[in-house]
Image (cartoon, rainbow, N blue to C red; front, top):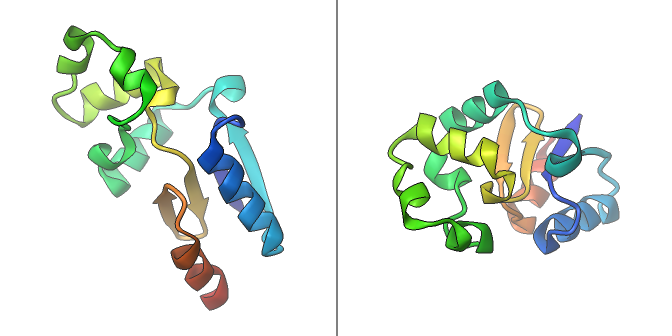
Amino acid sequence: MIVVFGIPNCDTVKKARAWLSSQGVGHEFHDFKKHGLDGQLLAHWAQTVGWQTLLNRQGTTWRKLDAAAQATVLDSDSACQLMLNHTSLIKRPVVQWPGRLSVGFDARQWQAWIGGS
């Protein structure tokens, strides 16, 4: 089962979910805000794709953090802790595919994956 993790009002998450639906690809949606996020799962993602890929330093949430909070991010553990405290810092969507994980929306890549499965 494909699981899309994110927040429902994120434009990229909306686009990704709409694309999956338009392709007839069943998926489950996990809302960070409503359902939270397990620290072990986040650590697994960071190990799989790299914490630098997961941490959205371009978004509003990062820019609103004070410099001291931003400076606490030194490695995977500290990045994961900050992302658990502020789930909006996680680049979206995070998608668990059978046997792989993706961050962000890439229709061309996703098409290759669903076409090749």
